[in-house]
Structures are given as C-alpha cells and as structure tokens.
Amino acid sequence: MSSLPRAHELGLIGCHVCGLVCRDVPDLHDATCPRCGAALHRRKLGSFARTWALLIAAFFFYIPANVLPIMRTVSLGDVDDNTILSGVLELWVKGSPDLAIIVFTASIVVPMLKFLAMSLLLISAHRRTAWAQRQRAKLYRLVEFIGYWSMLDVFVVALLTALVQFGILSLVEPLPGVVFFGLTVVLTMLASMSFDPRLIWDSKETHD
Image (cartoon, rainbow, N blue to C red; front, side):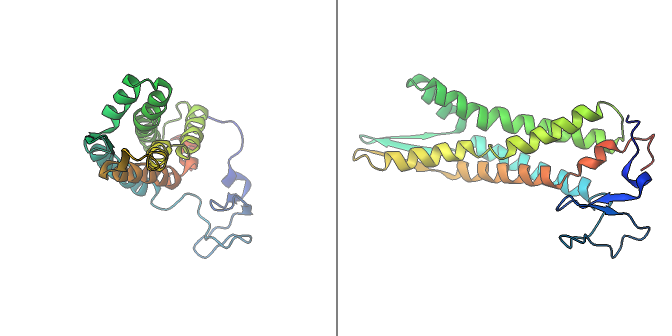
C-alpha cells in the first residue's frame, strides 16, 4: 500500500508506448499521446486475458521443447540425438560442466521461474491484493530483463552447429525441439510485454 498520490488523483496518465506523462481527460476514447500518437489507456485493454493466453501457449510449447530432441551430433558415423536434459548430461560427462550449467540454467531454470513469476503476478493482480507490491514490481522488471537472455540455449545450438560444420568427420544439426523452445521463449516475452505492471498497484483499497 502506498501513501503517495496516484496518477488519476493528480489528473495524469502515462503513455504505455513511449512513457510520456500526459494530462488525463474524462473521456479517453479518442485521446492519443501527443508524442507517439498511441491511444491512451489508464490500463492496457485485455491485459489479463492476453497475458494468460500467451503464457499458457508458451507452457504447451515448452513440453515438446523438452520431449523432442533439439540437436543431432554425428561423429565418425555415430549418430546421437539429444533432448535438452540429455544434452546437458552429455556436456557434463564430456568435460564441459560450465557449458552444461549455462544450458541448464537458460533452458530449465529460467523458463520455469518465468512461468511461476508471471503466474504469481497475474493471480495476485487479479485478486487486487496489496501484498508485497514493491517486491512484485521488482519481480516484473526482473522477468522483463531476463527475457532478453532466454534465447541463450538457441544461441548455443546455433554456435555449436556453426563451429562443428567446419569439421570433416563431425556434424551438428538442430532438430525440431529447438524450434519449440524458441517459440516458448518468444511467447513468454510477449506475455511479459502484454502484462500491465500498473495492475500491481490496483488493490481493493485504491478502487482505481
């Protein structure tokens, strides 16, 4: 709960595209931002439904991303298809624990934490609770920040593919699992962008 005055009490409204603080008007149907021309809304329209839809779709894509192989390695006639977890284990066994930890963190830990964090933000905002608002706002900024680094696993596969292609007896190919993982990352990023963080500050006491 904050004792500071709220934007609507000061007659102000922020553009959710460029961030410009504008003068609030009673009828916002035709109001636009004078700087970027975007329509002004006190809250993003359909934020809850759109964010939930993107998050659930990302979760469904995350299942084949872990079940299907993401990478095929061919070495001296030996063909080996790896899922994310088997790839992590193989990297660890073959003496690359640092790379195994990076892939495990980017592919398993980060996506699961994003699912949990976004679900927490959505449920708490929907319940309009005043619980830990500052902490939830920081959590949202953290989810947005790590979203840009979630493609690290895809980059690792692409890098390995590019490096090993120069070998004569070795070959690395990306498989469908990496496509589903890429879709998962993109959809979770879109989900965090669709969520309106101003909803965090709408508690039952504010009546905003």
